[in-house]
Structures are given as structure tokens and as C-alpha cells.
Image: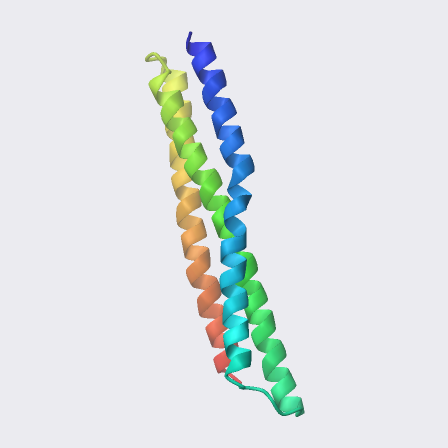
Length: 135
């Protein structure tokens, strides 16, 4: 009975992990909207070297920000799935100390992963702002 429950939960988690990339295009389309808005405002309509450099820097910054956002979404989904798996392991451990320790470690490492991803977002945004404002 418990083994069947574990197998069914594993199948559901695998299906959720496979469907998670469907969330990614929303992040990419938001970045595309920002690029289109900056082009509509006419920030760089003349063909000078300074304008081309500014546009390419913005494109690189937007690309880096988009890649980091996509990576963060994927890692965040995986971390939440691992927290769920850790919780299920904890519930089904039947008081066995090795299984309880394994479940607690799974939950702890998943939470640490979420914190690292959140900090990476702030660090990347900070570095991109400093890199573009120094010029």
C-alpha cells in the first residue's frame, strides 16, 4: 500500500517536473516586451557608434537577466518538488532515525537552494546595475 502510494506520488512529481518548463515562456515574453518598449520610445534611432554600443549593452544585460530568470524558475520548481519529496519521506519514515534524518536533510538542502537562488537574483541585478551605471 505504501509502496503504491510512493510510486503514484513519484509519477505525479515527474509529470509536474516535465510540465514545469511551460511556465518559462511567460518570463521570456516579459523580457521581449521590455525590449520592444525601449525601441518604441526611440532611445537609439540615430546610427552612431555610441548608440549602437548602448543598445548592445542593454541587449546583453537583458539576455543575462532573462537567462538568470529562467534558471531561477527551474531551480525554484525543483526545490519546491524536493521539499514535497522530503515531506513525504518524513511522513513515511515510520520513526526510523535514518529515514527521518534523510528526510530532514532533503528539506534543509532544498530550502538552502531556494535561498541561494533568491540571493543570486539580487546579486546579478546589483552587478548589472553597477556595470551599466559606471560608464
